[in-house]
Length: 376
Image: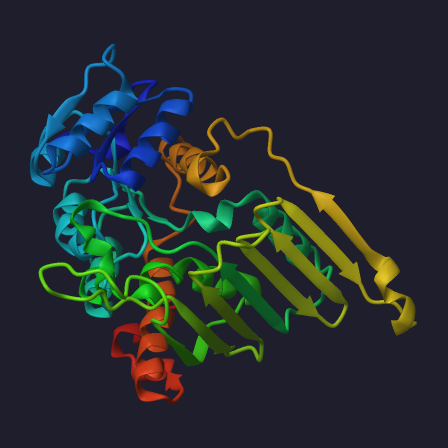
């Protein structure tokens, strides 16, 4: 098989494994890019394959397969997006990594830390040149990117506190309702909020050392039954994370709060000031402390963030498109992944620790997770 690192044609040929809602979103983003085409898709469900074909268009020659292995062995692709249900990621990733193709895997990396660590170690042992990219696209939200620029400029000084609020709608329907059960998703604090734990790590510049969580399933999906089972996924939680550099972060999650102006609000505070990103309105607020605390409000500047490079807005305010542009740039340049599977492991690990804390009613030390041993 031709190695992905040896791409010699101008157009990057993409395969997509898993063509449900997120798979179709990835197809739309690839089709919006220059010099990129979706040439193959794989999914065991005929309706999902039909949805993929409709997005690619009848004028384009699309190869369709019912299994990931068939797509990986087809020779139709230079890069592959893995957007299958969470519980399948491990089994799909192992042969995908061995194929040598460039990969972008949707979050979470895997549903267990043991599986995550196996993937991380396998990628580390691969020859240089293959890009395995972790799909944590919230890093690419335009107001979040601007907020990160301000952190890097030192606008607030050393970050001391990060607060992330996501008040949103309940989980959407997925094929066979796989996302209704913790055994399939890894749990809400892995499935949904690994994005936010990744942002906390990026914003604080630290590694997590202790996690405390409280939450429950109080409103959503309680009347639903699947083969006689009631869904067990959390619909609200608070999670507090302490970092090794003395900073701390908090997540406020509510999934029955769609009656909100902004779905996500992020606050970052340091000794020099405060940053806020509101992604539905695409706003950034920059506040600088002044000697007179009573007039400090006048130091707040509000900026509307627009990224004219976004050619497909999609489900994530253009973040997935910008992520794909970076992924393609790395492929063409022979670069490396800007978002790694190790990043995916750390994000999932905070979620796993949060679930353990919630179950025990006690803080959980990250040092008690053996899968993190030896990681940078």
